[in-house]
Image (cartoon, rainbow over all chains, first blue to last red; front, side):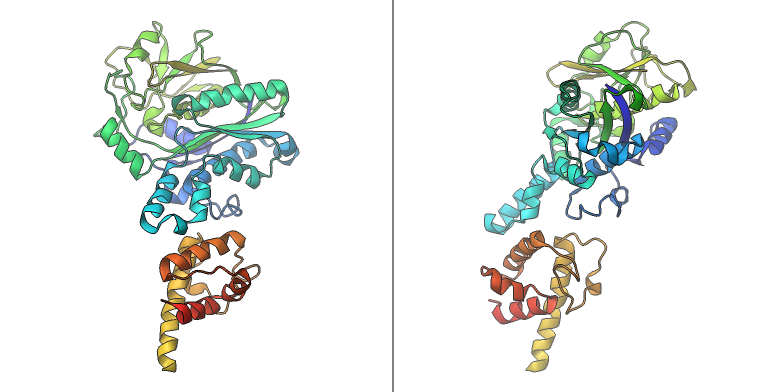
Length: 339
Length: 92
């Protein structure tokens, strides 16, 4: 399937221009949590019918809207447009606010709006109503593999011709509860820097949030970026492998074992922060590199295992990029993109 | 006596406006911009049926008042003024 458009919102802002600048600039210390600034979520036009939406839904709406707008396909594809949203944890900040309300006021006095927004599918409903799409919609929550599963399903829907175009993407957020869980179960990077190439058994992380969306189709004429040529297995040696070693899935020593000798390696985790749906963000960066035929330097350079790191921003011939992730059960998933 | 009631109503109106803005996510409106007699639903402030349910919860939580009869609710929910009067007259 081909990528016809992309949209992204992350801690440094919204849009592909912001992403490109972030890739150029590399790592900057964004604090102990890489949250999306409140002002980034303000858009009176796109969000005019989503007044009640929580931040989780707003991030998803904006990224999905931008992916569709980026394609330039607009109104004509809406009757044939499906939506698949991947999320590792769903709108947990809203869910915990809802639970707090039950504790504080009793179950008869909780906000019905808060309840309706605690449902994982709320965000995709907002996207569908905001964009007035009329195809099938689904939300997938499968922790570390959510986005990969969403891609597999998107491919299947396109093959079955259930729809001609699909907005497939991810959204995840940070919140006080998430920060607490991370502080208890994982290790925070004390200087705000994720070191993706340390391959530690107890890696450090910086929780991040945001949303990344792709408009995908089997219509080659609509291809704007590249093709997603496969999910879950490495089919060929790519020109660049982006490691999603972000400290969020425990032991990262397996990354070292799977890398072939001389494989050119980078990681976008230090830019986006740690998220179980990080692969979707890395895939946007990869698609941008393939489109521009430009390598962006790895945002961190600590390289204790002498990998062949991508260390400078430079033009180059790129045919394929793979995004590799290991989950908490040491199971790998790979997203292959090629021109 | 009349002055006293008016003062109490003013306090209730101010609180109501703050609660409406924060609980109904009226991001572009400041509490002081809502007129006392502004129609809340449809034209005016533009609230809808989902907002009505939120206002029912808001009245329960903040003033201990229940609105069960929706015919009665239509009159009560007409404006900030009508809401404030209902709260003033029925507050426990």
